[in-house]
Image 1 (cartoon, helix red, strand yellow):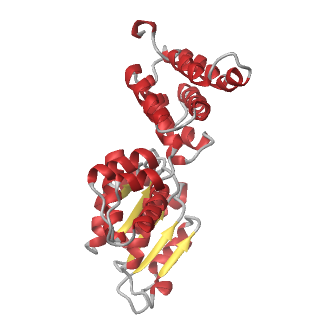
Image 2 (spheres, helix red, strand yellow; image 1 turned 90 degrees about the vertical axis):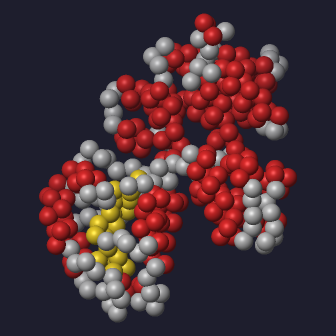
Image 3 (tube, rainbow, N blue to C red; image 1 turned 60 degrees about the horizontal axis):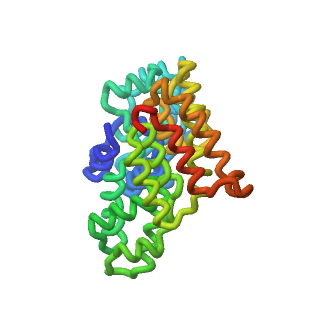
Length: 332
C-alpha cells in the first residue's frame, strides 16, 4: 500500500487491524500517525493510545486486548518489528485482535521485507511504504501546504520551489512556512518570493548534477552545473558536496558488490536515511566501467580546493576537469 492510500483510509475512517509503516520519509510517516490520532476524541485520546518500544508478544497482546475508554477504538503504536518467536505469536494473535484496536508497527527507515513478519502483512496489503517523494510529488505536496496555510502558489512556482528546497518533507515544511509568513495570509507565493526567501538545498541541487554524469548524460550534467553556478553557488562548495556524494556512492557500491542487503547498505552510510536511499540507487545503477572513473573523479573533486588555494588552477576549471573524468572516452 502506498502512503496516499493510507491517508485516504484515515480520511474515510476505514482503518482496522494491524499495519506496518516504514520507509525513509520520516516526516510524512509521522504526519500520517498524527492525522490518525487527530480523528480520535481529544478528551479521551491519552487514555486510548499506547506506545510500545519493543515488540514483545505478551506485552503487545495485553495492550491490544484492553478495551477503549469511552471511545470507539484504541490505538497501539509499536516502534519495533517482532522477530522469531514473538513474530510467530503476534501473527497468530492478529486475527483474534479486538475490532476496537488499531495496531501500528511504526519503524524508522525501511523494514527488511525478506523477514517473515513483514511478508505476512504485505500479503494482506497491510504494509505502508513511505518512500522519498519525487519532485512532481513534492510539488503537489507544496500545493497542499499552500491550501492548509491559506496562501496560493501556481503549479510552476511550486515546481520552482522544489528545485531549490529539495524533496525532504521536513525541510520543505520549514521553508514553506517561511514563505507563507513572508507573503502573508491570503496572498500568492510568487517566484520572486521563493528566490528571495528559500534557502537552497545544495545537497539536493548538486545530487542531480552528478546523477546526470553517472547516467552518461554529460551535456545535461554540464547544463545543470551551469544553472547552479548561475544561481550563485560557489565552485568550491559544489566540488565539496559532489566529492562527498561521490565518496558515499563508492562506499555504497563496495557494499553492494559484497552482496550486502539494501537495508544494511543504507543504514551503514553516514547520512540521513533519505539521502542514503538516493545514494544507494545511484550506486546500484553504476556500471562496472564507471567505478574506476568515479574513483578518479572523487580524488579530483577533493583536489579542487588545494588547486584553487595554491593558484595552480581556478576552482571552476578544476571542477569541470574533475567531472570530465566521469565521461567515457567515446562520449568526449
